Amino acid sequence: MNDEEKLEQLFKQQQFMILAVTLADGTPWATPVRIQNRQDNQFEWDSKLDTEHSKAIAVRPKIAVTIFQKKEDSQIGFYAKGEAELVEEIKPGFGRYRFTATKCWINDETFVKREVAIDA
Image 1 (cartoon, rainbow, N blue to C red):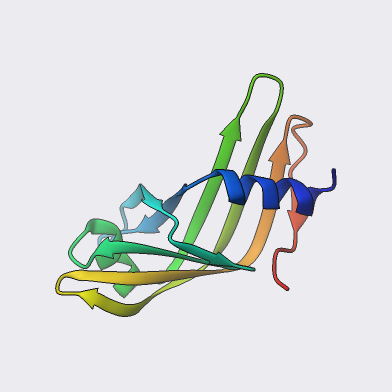
Image 2 (tube, rainbow, N blue to C red; image 1 turned 90 degrees about the horizontal axis):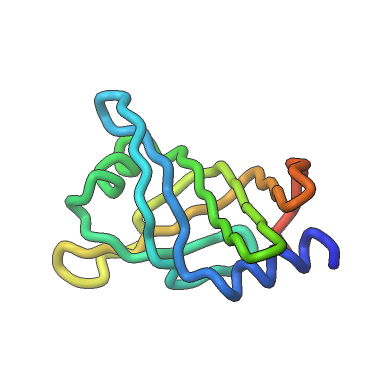
């Protein structure tokens, strides 16, 4: 199985990703979010507009994302950097956010981090 196939399998199996943002005061902050939609290099999730990560994205849209999975004899991690944005307010106080990955890597049981492309 090649890296792109491994990633597609990971994306189909995992419902959550970890966002790494920088708060307005420069403090790093990481939080899990449920993936609502993914197409190529774009991932969407819903969050309250007043959460730490939502406020951070409004000030500093450059973020990092990771998705990972560990099984008995295998593991895989996806790492990406890019930009996030509020796409729309879906109901009062809640928004749909989109992360667009600009650079991505994979790491598996070989412990060799490799750059991958996930866009169409």
